[in-house]
Length: 254
Image (cartoon, rainbow, N blue to C red):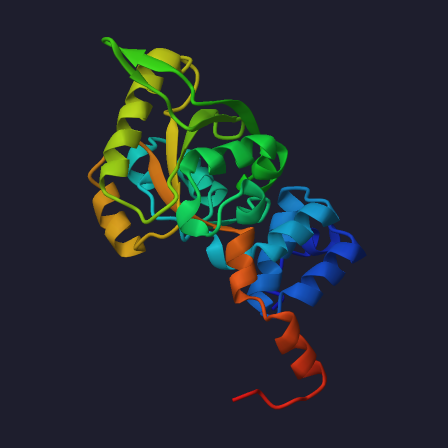
């Protein structure tokens, strides 16, 4: 353990941080990961608690992407890989509040609207050093008009980040659409001192192996992540009746 643990990081976070990590992370390697990340990123206890809740340890590095191939500087590529997760918990998106009966009724624009209304929560969920640029950002090239869903700027990566929202399963055509947006951004919007723009497709479901295979055929930095809403979380939680039965040690009804 002494060989794996950085003593400076261990002593560099508060007792409260250690309590949070001990309570939520059961594996030694997982605990070392959170100690190191909390120290180098200067997370307060609330940020640490949120990332423990999102299970960052098991999601880091799982995003299907082509960053190593498309971002010239290896250090920048590693930062980008570490920056994005393969799944995001957008629990501020509530199907009932949107007015839909179920997931199939939720329109992409409604999800986008919910994110805009909660843009601070979205940025905190998405990662550090993000600044919101706009939604339905107008791009025009040779008389053709495009409107990427969400546009951010990341200070650490020094790059524009496009997020395209898709309410259903991943489709190969999404990569072509995103690549077109990135091409226009890099030629018409990106500043000379900035790095190549990055694109993220955020959808409900995706076959990682299939995405990883397809995405290597593109020259723009891209990744595909999935998200869960409040409705998805509720589906996996036990009902009030089930909780009462467990607490009362009642047998399950036939």
